[in-house]
Length: 350
Image (cartoon, rainbow, N blue to C red; front, side, top):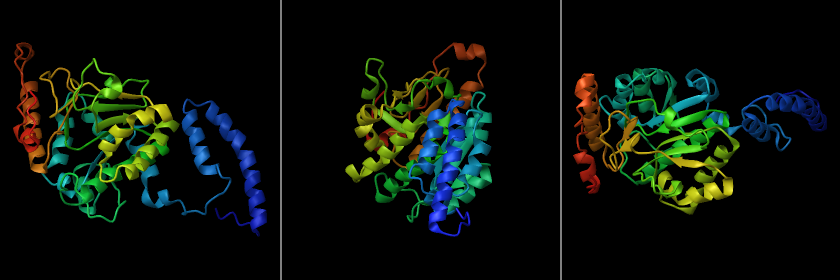
């Protein structure tokens, strides 16, 4: 740490003295805090091996440069940030990022949530485009792979892209921030936070939802999930990332579904699925515009297909919100059928 002691032995005695003096004070402070678990986790990470790395040696300081300074500017009062990720193809004018941002402005009292949205760009051109349309952008240069173009589903580059986001999310949790992650191929209508159960470590969307199923039997979809910053969720993210080696060639969602019971049994995390009446997608949605919070372009392959069918959904919403109360009460509303997306995978669910 550049303390300037004359010998290695003197340095180690001085560090031991400083830790002995500082640790009780830190613990007293943390015991007065409702974030005890997170604070102890921080101490464990920093002091657990009673060694102090020289300034700049922490790889996280390089990989996530500027993130600790940026998060307080974006976070809500309860230290929650909304996160989405883009590359150049998704951030192009008229592409998914524009649809995503515009949906906040056209939604029901959610425009203010844009102040708490952090767009993570996975390539330099995506970062430049993000800065042109949104105030809170972060360039995550975490892989040598060129992330700028549209990636074919399940291609090696696609897999690298989807796994890279977990590295970033783990760091957000480690810094003591909760997050709501959503894929950018989504449109928003209402504030989703009221639908996340307070007891859950992770609330996750699903491809289709049946109340009769047990929570872990629901087909979970990691296109949208909320995670609290706790010791359990940091351990969960590490376990999830490490499981990639056990399932080579699989994307993050597939691996998560395979290990979800392990996460609950080994780490005691609480995972709750979210109902599709509130968090719909092209796999399953409900024609109930009075409840819907988000619609995700899942069950869809191809950037152009996603943009086309999400644009229809956004137009449906604008038409609906332009109706009078009396007109809305007559009912009969239906979303435009996502023909191109469902055709892209041969999906024919009503």
